[in-house]
Image (cartoon, rainbow, N blue to C red; front, side):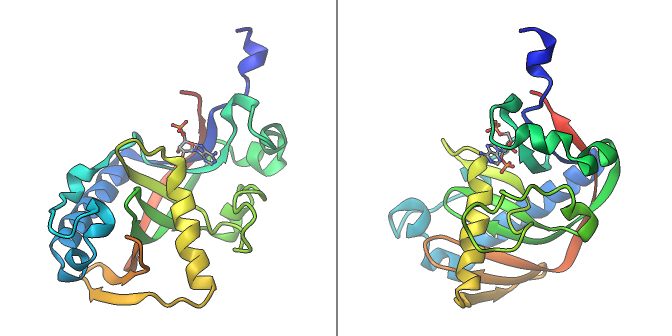
Amino acid sequence: APLEEVDLPLFFGWFLLSSVQEKVRCTSMDFLKTLDTLEAFKKHLADFTGKAEKEVDLEQYFKPKGALHCTTKFCNYGKAEGAKEYAENPAVKALYGSAFELSLTALFVTPRTVGARVSLTDEQLQLWPADAEQSSSLPPGSRAHITLGCAEGVEPVQTGLDLLDILALQQDGQQGEPAEEMELGSLTYYGEGRWLLSLREPIGAPACFSSFYG
Ligand code: A2P
């Protein structure tokens, strides 16, 4: 295709520096390894396997999905709604290629995905598209996350939807079921295989705002 037809990327986002990617992957692997062994998790194993008796190895269950990043705008090479407007946003142009520090404040697991919640600063929210939270009444930035892995046959777009689903429950006043105090933080169960670990210490992750063409 002629160059002018491919000027927009697959997506814009913050790309974690490789040293911190390693750290985040290790933390999430440790979390999955521990989650697997908890009685609270075993009690709800049928959410993952369909059968109460079967075992599940979460580290195998979730497949990694490439370089760790937090998508801001999925452009689909310009085919996604609002892609061109986003790329032309002065903040996007001004901050393209800049370094940021993302704050990872929670890890979450569902039968479909495992991800990290990213809590954006006001400066980072300038790069957040207005339509990301879709029809939900959650505040801008709620969907910000890093996909850490997906179950067989699940696309990474699901991770953000799973996060929005959990946050919508919280917004509705559903406290969830406190399940365990872990070294990393407090683990809560929200039913239907949805688990959220609020990190005691947020993980600071240096990242570059850029784009991915694939
Ligand atoms: P995520 O940001 O949750 O990881 P793919 O490989 O499927 O083309 O996706 C490339 C990246 O864009 C992934 O990071 C993915 O999800 C994100 N993504 C894919 N589709 C969408 C969408 N419709 N809305 C928002 N983000 C998307």
